[in-house]
Length: 214
Image 1 (cartoon, rainbow, N blue to C red):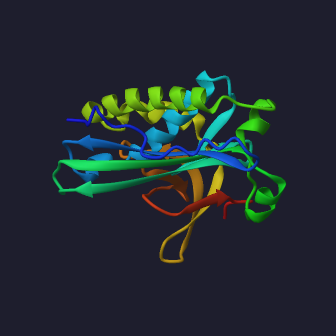
Image 2 (cartoon, rainbow, N blue to C red):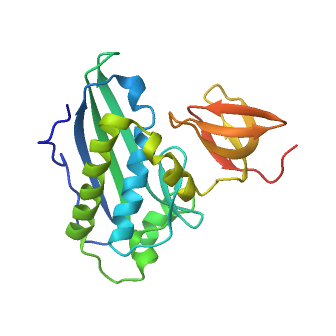
Image 3 (tube, helix red, strand yellow):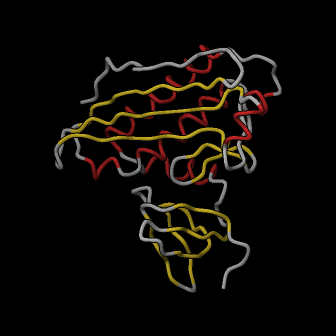
């Protein structure tokens, strides 16, 4: 049974330039770690939906743990799981979203990045409202995930996937590279590629667009 008393363990609501919205949330599951394989993706979907309900449009997801807008990273998710193999288990969900990046912060990040100020075009944002909308979506998602896993979120996640149907390459943990066209994700949240007539499944790796498929 989930820990209904869970609350954000940390909120960084600094309104200064270079600000971000970061928090962590703990949720207890009766199931073990295997059941939570797709939780990171479900969290990303709920974040995008929460921000959209606050008027921030066009937010997409990049497998497995990034929020993006256009081709730029907007935020990220880290889920840590502790507990028994067969359950119960505790998931600690860490979230970081760029709210207003300073020019210096943008230069220091070695990839295209954006922030909510750029997405919305607003000079200021009500971070408390953003956090409230996000937590509302997260709580609803976690209650559903408890009983049904990732499957109910799969189609909606794929509709928001920035790389859906596109040619990509995956840098694997062992240094190898796999290439294919994104077919989607499976019921456990693994990325599925079409590659030379085969379906390949990946549970980890760094994904990027490929110029062409051989």
